[in-house]
Image (cartoon, rainbow, N blue to C red):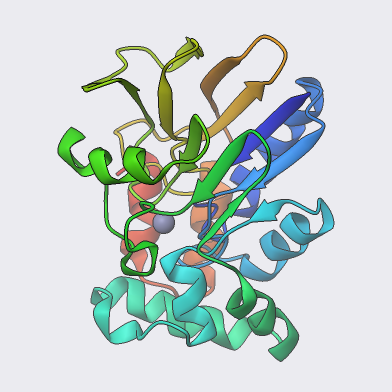
Length: 241
Ligand code: ZN
């Protein structure tokens, strides 16, 4: 089975469509989403419709829950907050209800999905340092956990007491190891590379790869400005930050 795992679409329809076109080429059979479908970008409704249409196993991001009212927008920075309030106005009560019902953690036989970390997932911690991964590894009842949230792709590996950061974003899983895969962001990358990020997991070969694809950044920026969203949300897409 070939799985497509994506995260942090943030209402960026152009980026999502580019990733999905590639997923078609990659013969992806099953889709997973690590949260933050909405917030920041100009097309939250359309992105939500696509994610739901593909029946992605999808968990809650902090922006999803802030838009639904389950998380207090007061904790967000002013730009994020403005985008959250704008997004609330674009969605129907039914769509808001869908976001509200998203769970913090979900899993299948092979993998776990969460937005930030498995420890206190409702607090949406960032996994910025390897020490932050310890608790999540301890709580994993599968060898594989996919996350998002930081918008920076990363593969963290644990073998017994040793935890390290993979120096490549293409790996083959080894028996006896656990893996935390941050798939990066489709709609607002923050690792200095403006291309949309997405992940492919082949259960047969046990291969996992985080890839990048160009998309129509100019169009996504134009829509953000036309919507009256903060201009900085458009500008950052060019630099991937
Ligand atoms: Zn996010």
